[in-house]
Length: 102
Ligand code: FES
Image 1 (cartoon, helix red, strand yellow):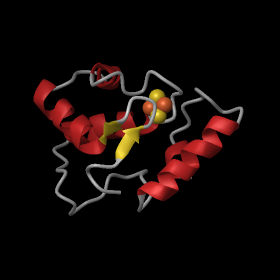
Image 2 (cartoon, rainbow, N blue to C red):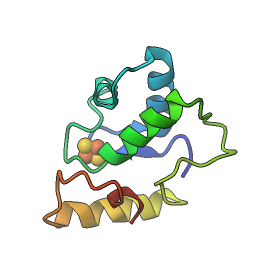
Image 3 (tube, rainbow, N blue to C red):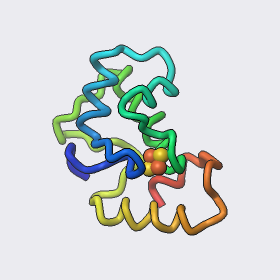
């Protein structure tokens, strides 16, 4: 997935926006990622990715394309399809870390 692909479909928040928000604000807790345009406060699909992004930014991960963020599929189409499956399932808001990559 590219930096301008949406991570939070409910609030249309891109990976780039979330990455820069996490770096700029130096967030103490993953839940603070929701302060970026409400990301994660809708269906809950993106919460595992928001948590992973928060962790990796704190570790110094760079959004330069050299190392993909773990848990994200290679392309946005697969990510969108996985989210559609999540929306249709009864797994909403279960926050399984494997959901985002399946
Ligand atoms: S996709 Fe982020 S809350 Fe629904």
